[in-house]
Image (cartoon, rainbow over the protein chains, first blue to last red):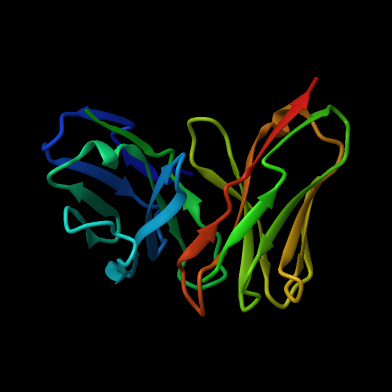
Length: 114
Length: 113
């Protein structure tokens, strides 16, 4: 079975550039989560969707961050303009709908903003 | 505000040893607790999910217990193997019936052959 697929795996770009991270959840999963992991702050939830609708975006750090889920099989996390402090590993996860469903993570995108 | 603490931060044991990883949380009003494993350069793999009505869950050599009243969970690994080397994280919902999980900082485990 294909797991959660994220692209790109690595991204290096200069400050001020737009960055778009992509995620394909597991087929049939109705919940999708975007996380950020750093050494300083650990793993933090940025936003999550149920049935393609954003439910809680309180973890999105600034207006520079935006996320979309145009359909059940695709989501993007965009940073515009990017800053060096955005450097982190960004994970996408998906699960079946329901509060007691385990989350399945992708391998992440390692983002470096120079 | 929910806070999650994991002790120890790092652990190194010889192969074959049984070991216990600890997780504590400040708000006991949770509906579940999850244990994850993270290998270097990889995402998290869900190991066990314990619902609030349960006291423990088992999967192979792994056993997780939950004591909501004391705000504690333990992950027991029997007969550890070098392949168990990874970082183990626990996570609980931040508040109420939400998908917003708060993660501990993890225990980095190394099992020596």
